[in-house]
Length: 155
Image (cartoon, rainbow, N blue to C red; front, top):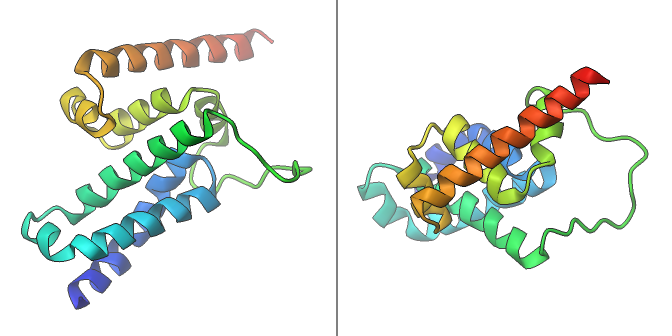
């Protein structure tokens, strides 16, 4: 298990950033990382032999994120609406605001395609959809981002 602990220390911050890009907030990102690492810990002997534990964790995080999205039926319930949002710790706040306007599946496709640099076939396998669905979701997401950006420029 020392190898597992070393992996967590070495890749934990990168996984947290990845979770943030998927989920859109620090709390959900931490939950995704924690749950995925717990599953990796259970499967560590088997995953370690395949030489890609980080890929396993990232795939698990995407699947957990999609599963939570399906469970909540696209509702984001909060106990109280904050007066101000928390500052963006991981990058361009404007870009993140635009990404949050996308449906979760479209956001996941863009993250996997452009942040993870995965081919469409791998994205399709991770999300459990066809390659054509990945392409159409990416095209729709990019179109929506372009329309939103143009609308902001015209204001």
